[in-house]
Image (cartoon, rainbow, N blue to C red; front, side, top):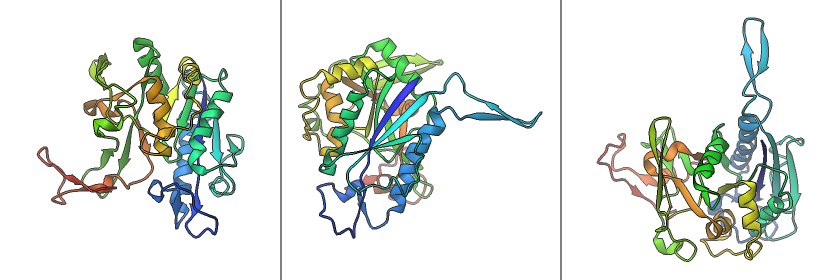
Length: 306
């Protein structure tokens, strides 16, 4: 399998003498320290290489040799980092040059996600999946694309399955939290009708699995097969740079997909069927527990505003 991952990436140090962009600091694009952003970027890139790449082995102790592993699952992966000017951490992150290609544009950094769409379009016809990732997402499920292929083989290419984003914490009462719960229906009503084919159900390895049309379709990523990519490219709004869904970052990751396809996610009771980790802790720590004890079934914690 050939996989193309395109990642918009921007970082401007808070003390830079360059003019600020309209990217909000709440997205982590500006910070007093680059170290957390470097760690997140490295994890995003190396998780792809380690999970889907070809350099995988098993140690055979009987003759002290390392032999190939996961030959049936390995893929050829290409990663493109979309940046602008000097405002990136690619050099500090020490990314492998033979794996990551840097594509620089001279434009407002809020538009980097839309230029990533162009990169995907210009390479159409060469890959089995066309993937968009925000630069702080770690994909570590080796069966991820097999699940996508299974899903579309059963329901068709007019539907797109997106993963649930999550964060982990060692200190918080909740050790794992999914980030993208329901928005108010008015937030996506102009772009999708979630009452159409509202849910899908199946049985996988003897377990029931349910997929829903989410009121919050954002995942910070998307993954399209060649037929889906072609369908999106052919839409008149493909290069519209439309930012009308929340903001430019959310629109680049979600709006075009939401306009073109019916989006599904695994339902909350089986949220982990398809998931991707957010390399941050800022959302999980918005949950305020009334007690430091571990949450019980009756716990109804409050969530602070981000």
